[in-house]
Length: 441
Image (cartoon, rainbow, N blue to C red):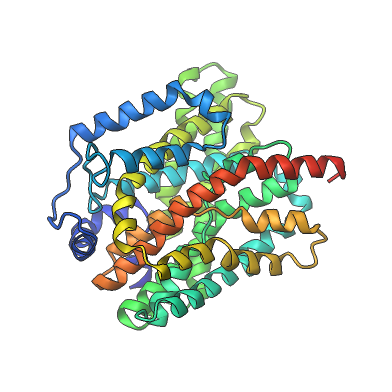
């Protein structure tokens, strides 16, 4: 049941639409939202999104000079214009459009970030992301589950484990201010980039197992090792194959002048979605498929067209902006109805000690100075992956109170992360980069 229950892609979305909407009804009632099983995204909602993008675009350079990130601005605008604000944007929590949007956005962003990784430079310190993706990630899941079990006494340990897994993956999109800052040492930037690119895909089989244990009391489709090897291994092979094929096609098109410059940004985005979907169809992790495809595509096309990275970044940025706007419009209602001291403390601890302790432990013996370790421990923002995982749980036959708790924990954690990591990214990156430059790091 596990792997089928937790498919994280549009294929799973479409096949499970009816069950998702039905399962979302108790949650909607609990948070005061609509309880009808209708899917609707009105033309007025689309007009609002377009207007917000136009207005933000006009002032984007001015905002870029401040500490306000795009995700933060979009989330705040969504909250202002959503049903719990001015009521102009009326899409509701049961509208699965946000699941599709967030999933596609995450796939494109992962591919885009991976394509900028310099494997030669990363190879010199591959131990850093490797430690963070093993000891750090598993420790964050386990500690997060313990904290959830302690703070939320109505949850069984299985549902606490679901929360621990959902709140563990970090977000590549929210970490852009750090991973793109040339003042930050390349080892730190690439380690954060690789970690955020792979940890959500690695977390998928753990989420599948956790939900299966919570819902049916057992995990029947192979052991954890088998699931992880299957989803990660298959996805990696598909990502390598599709990334290489797409790169060769782009190189051919540019060399012989058969590819229009207008399509040089579309082909990489299509490759990201293709790797995601093919990996999923092969029962692998779509997220890892997209990331590995980017790792393969980037080095092979780096000297083909200097603007390819820009095209990808623009596509991912646009999708991320829309996703965080929709999230902001929906999140305020969830937060206002489910915010208690227990949920507040869970979100704060998830962003601080729950991540920092396992990551710092994983970095013992790396030779990094304490400032670098703290930088890696702090910049683990939660965003798209947590949103996607939480929405998928809505369709996983999880009881009403438990699904409300899980979604509430995810929403509050992402909201706090967008603000806290957004406000701290620029000043801390500048301060750390300045220190690293003066100390020869």
